[in-house]
Image 1 (cartoon, rainbow, N blue to C red):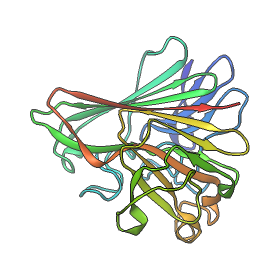
Image 2: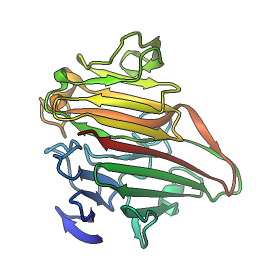
Image 3: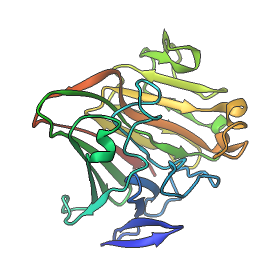
Image 4: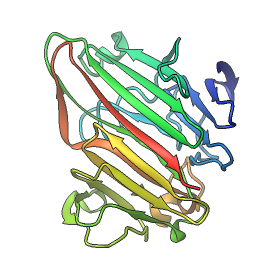
Length: 280
């Protein structure tokens, strides 16, 4: 069932399945803040210093990035929709799992910042040990528009030094920690050693986060790139919404369209998705 509840001043949607899996979203930003597969611990990192207010972004979970990624454009960091109110759309789209779907549409406030007519829908589908997050963007304008997007997934880890990411060997990336310098990942596996902020261009569809308490497989659809991010100790110490050692317990692996914008024709729609699966 999908039931609307109120948590910490934000309206939330709780998704629960009969086999015990559950997820929680806020209508503020259509932000997924919790995912607990059946028989497993919390899989998403949520900072205990995050502002849970309608006028601020949430640090952790899965922020929706649209129509701008980071500072690649004139808008606020990561775009328009992560600090706006979405509405819950009735109905379920997947017969074998419980779903929640939220929608936002352009209005006078968004037009003042970005002139295009658009709509976004976020659908979360819950399985016993899987979670699928789908972002749909609609162009409701009379002309094409360009956008960048990401599902900014913060994954919880017990110790960042004990995890590795498989599947990115040989892939070219932009190093955002070094002024977008271009490089190729020549490591067999990726380990986080200090600040890491990379946009892997044309990334593989499937990646694997290996960690002692259980691996997580990540499968992307529609998104051409993947972002891997951890602020590292020095940067984390200066982040107001993170504990100084918060970097130890998270890594972001984000399906994204960053290196080149997506061009969407009038009346057209684009869909990108990520499926997370916890391995036993």
